[in-house]
Length: 254
Length: 308
Ligand SMILES: Nc1ncnc2c1ncn2[C@@H]1O[C@H](COP(=O)(O)OP(=O)(O)O)[C@@H](O)[C@H]1O
Ligand SMILES: [Mg+2]
Image 1 (cartoon, rainbow over the protein chains, first blue to last red):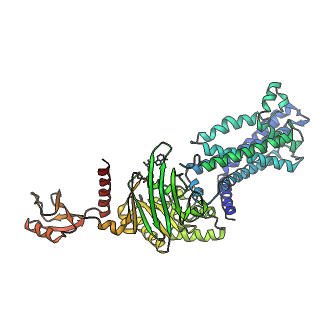
Image 2 (image 1 turned 180 degrees about the vertical axis):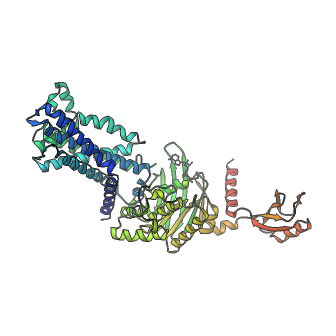
Image 3 (image 1 turned 135 degrees about the horizontal axis):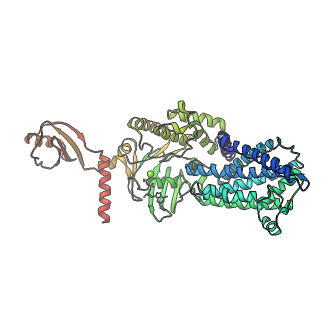
């Protein structure tokens, strides 16, 4: 019971944070994705024609939605938890009888909520460009939840290990963004040379983007069950790693 | 019942620095206890371990009988901490800061709101509850941390240099507040390097120096161990030749100011008699330093002498 109150408090604080700074958290994805839809989807897409029988616009919408979910769930947790650590107000949680898994669950939930909210914002914007007929809503929701969970966890671990503000932008800039762009958001992997198709299969984001696209328009580059298996596996792995770091007090206790 | 018992506590930081060298400490329930020590003595390190912010290298800490390692949550529930440095989110309001802390302790929302109001009123900040905490003065920020530490009505309240850098007036009002809280049954441990503070507030005291407890006793018996009181004398006329006084130390501070050391057993009468004979007229007199300060210096000198 008291654990539930503590969890609620963390989540409430996280929501309050990203709502309060909405011009930094919710507005930019709206603008960026509107530009993507306009430039890639509309201006360039009209000349590209169709991929797997769908218009280029319809093909990229799911990828752009999921890319936003990834970026923002990661960004939410990494910046919130890092500044909590940096300002030492993590100590408020450490002195209180809050189990580590509740701290983790609280911050991850904050990341999921931000990811989902941004996903919704982007989806709404896409409606100005093309109707969105989601073929399998339950599956789409599952992919969004799993993906945002995974990247919230990754953001959390990044924040624990980071020792400076530079450290919290390295992963997003040098890993997350390239993997997202190379994860088939803007193209189908079978448009790539064979060797790059094989290399792409090592990119976890490709699986999630493909699964999400499949749930929305019924077209996929990869095996969907493999996508779920992989995401689930990574979530377990990162959860245990994060809990182990918290247990050791890495970066938060001396 | 001990509010706090510490046994053979050691802390070596990752850079190899030994901040605590096996300390023992006991604080009784209901006590107002001072942990005294110079900067860098190890006070905050000890408090960090007590409050689960710092990992101990070895030794045990129990809060109201609960071991902070093995019964962590029970131990934590008994403890409220006011840390040395500001550690709340400065972009949040005082009210949210205190309210969230109540949530972390598992207090249901409705009760948490009541407790937040009570505690913010107690530290005189209810009017400022909706101000972004960044805009509060230094003394107010410290009081926000006091309110936050009391929101779950802890049985033991630890304050790490709560009055450092706050002006006299606020310091005195904090003293009154701490006295009230203690009178209502909360055990208080205070660290400070203002010795005056310890002397006027605390019943029991420990002195820590370079990671070791060099004194652990009650304030009264500690003070009686002082043999010599030092006084500053203001004179009517300048003295040119310093008289020798039989049985007293004497030192000239300036033309019209003298410092004398008065052994307890000799008293003051003979001092004034001798001064009158020497034709020195004293206009006024005051205690030189706070006595505890003197004791503190003696203790550390003794320790250094033993070690060298
Ligand atoms: N994280 C740390 N790493 C290494 N040394 C530390 C660390 N924190 C404190 N110290 C050292 O430990 C000693 C005790 O510090 P502290 O407990 O803060 O003293 P106090 O609170 O009595 O002023 C100091 O010499 C300080 O420099
Ligand atoms: Mg200190």
